[in-house]
Length: 395
Image (cartoon, rainbow, N blue to C red; front, side, top):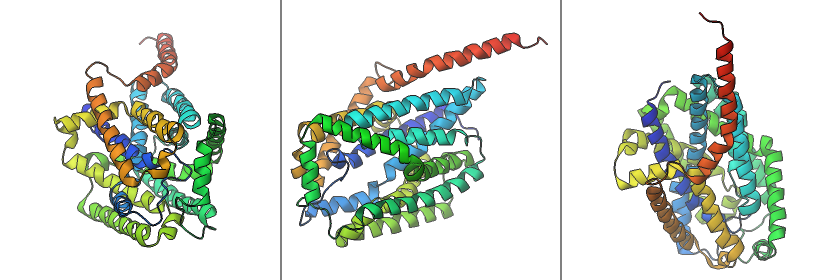
């Protein structure tokens, strides 16, 4: 498919900005204890019930699915751009993915073990050989992978939570032990984080490939089909709305009235409704032409999206620094309301930072570093192309 480059990039930046800010909203309660996530009070706070419901209806899974789709499309756009310049796209993109994997490992080991960059990089390696597939083939394989991924997620959760007889609360031994651990030495934390990074990489073909790969394939298939530039049909929208509402309402009900069951199925409902609502958000942005607005909010989101990697890492450095390393005792007292207010404040700061940063610079610092790390590979490909052209017979 052909898409106007300028409109496409503005549109993708807008969505990427929304996604990276939304990720902070979802990740913050787990910045201190990523192994457990947010641990509820006993009895539940009324404000917690409200925010759990709000999360299930509007936020859970939406932003990570958006990011996954954007990652697939970005990889494809780079692939076609390099190919148009007659460069070896595969070699260059493998270099980009290699450095993204390095960023992810550093992030996971030294900052926060809830890293997603490693998963995207590994998923990107899988996607490279599928970039020339037709939209139909991408969608069919993506749906199969996504369904398998849901089953793997269910088995994974069940293997961890099956023997739990009561919901995890702040009086649980597991929570107390986790708090004691993060209050200990940084060396012990590094060793645990390194082990997590190793297990993510080793188990990716089983635990991550099907879900990540499925969303990557579906996102790219929809992009190639034109759905992500023109929007969905009325029938398709009704299906997406039905799935989103049904699964989200079930999630809300279980989180309030069946907390143990909700804990056993944690992440499953958000994965399903997250993808369907991410596509609905995409449709609304397209149809309402939000990325074409010159409003301050729209410009902020676009500029935020242009430095998403930098902002994502900075979220972890500051928030994991506070909740995991400097003041771990905050995990004992913070409610979802406290996390929401903290995230909202930091989101505002990041938007303001991005807005003013691009008055001076053209790229985020980590985006610039990533590009420089790949420059040598690009230069080698350009040199090889020139040599091949010089050796070509004259006509």
